[in-house]
Length: 232
Image (spheres, one colour):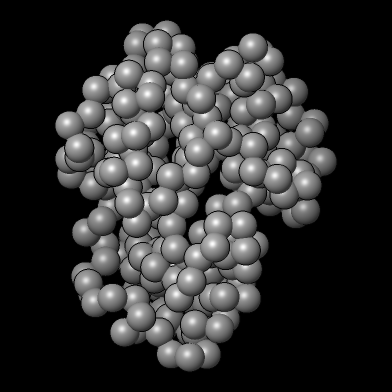
């Protein structure tokens, strides 16, 4: 997540959509007073800043449905992590002045769920402990914390509250449009992509899914598919 007073934008980071690459790129363009959240184990030089501060945690706590998520929120509050990497847009809205939320251009990135899930599966297998390395794709679909993103850019009623949802499939082209609007320097590419090396199998996702897996992802990601019109 980035809030840039220099360029007047708010970037909402989603999962498995080149979010870390975008955040690293934008952090290099941002000013010293801009808010740049942390990234978990960045693979390139990266300098977060100005993300700590006090805030009211009650709205977030009221949404939590498990003890683990409550403790996670309280931990962030007690350590003054006002803005986290994957913070929801509606939480940002609660924590910034109304003039900033209303006046800044808000954007995020989303990805075809079937492609996104497959990318996340390889990420989980390679990034985490050795027990995940042998997990099958079917077991992953049944048990993993899947990369649902729609809550990151919608309000509590499910309405999209950002100005632009960039399509990952057209990433450089659409980022070029957004950055051109904002005046952010961009030469058509983010450079090296963070975490892209975890996926070794580069076949099209359509060649990998079974019919049962295809239908299961369609069910699990029905909200994102309905909102943004994705197809297999």
